[in-house]
Image (cartoon, rainbow, N blue to C red; front, side, top):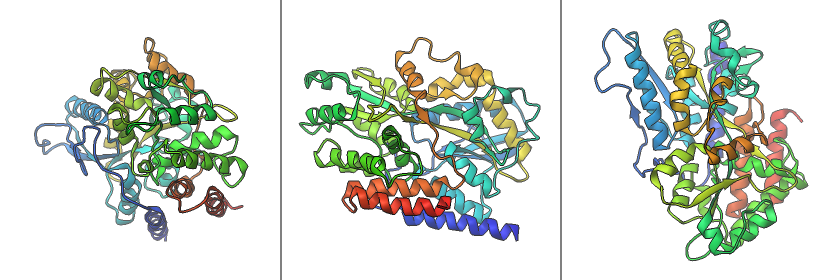
Length: 427
């Protein structure tokens, strides 16, 4: 009966996710433009030794710098011992939760996943993640994690994962474009609309952010909702409608392209470094790639312009071990990757703020860009939290999508989303 219920729950989540998809699917390209529907970062240039246990890790990072750094961590682990060999599979973010849910129903899962923190509880509730509470109770690193990230790995007081790193969103701006338009860096919504309009010309849009109809789109919209003073679960009120209207106005005055409904955060970054966008919302994980690929671009970052209050969204990923025969071997990789000294060797290359206090305190001491993100982090909130957050998120990103395409007014989109949210949280 338990197995039957898990399968049914997985299928329900999958059907809901499939039903929520609209429009053109985003490109599954890395930041270099290379098509990578499945990138195999194999951890070794040779075939795994027969005596080694084979482990598979699933992830969704599209940025080439992320993929290269993850590959380095995997190779380091594989060469550090002779008991397990890890290989990694890239799945585009837009498909990741669907593939994981289908895998749960078909019992075709990896051994390890790197998962978006707000989705962790939902999959732990499905019973596919191993309970690590007892396995890690004596692990020295456990007490070093910040409260927010470690709590995102818990369900009903039990631990079902280990945090990887944290991040948030901020405003990136092209200093030359703003100077040419005689504009200061915007600090509030009115200023943002004004600067976006003045810098929109000659094929350049003044502003962009990812508005995909999935968690990535919700992630980029939440700061605007929260800046008005509303909560994650209240969109059909004057403040929630105000946030949707703000997005609609940027589209209608031509300051933001409708193509944002098809752009991943990586696509937005590529448009920015190509000189097609004057300002964008994005995260610190893009910083290493931008510095590498566009060393001559004159850009900077600032806090996200506010309405009633400053706001950003807490992001980050967690490691989770899939329940099954390979739990102990998979956990050894997680502990290896989460070790303080190992984290210090690679976390900056991801552009992430470490979820471990003993590592975060040593980061970015001389990096003015990353210091802005650390400042922005104090205004960042977690999404939800709720074990059915994927469904709530889907309703919110669908509302944004419908407003941008003109399928709904802000008022109608907010009402539709609220009905879905209320049905989930039991109002």
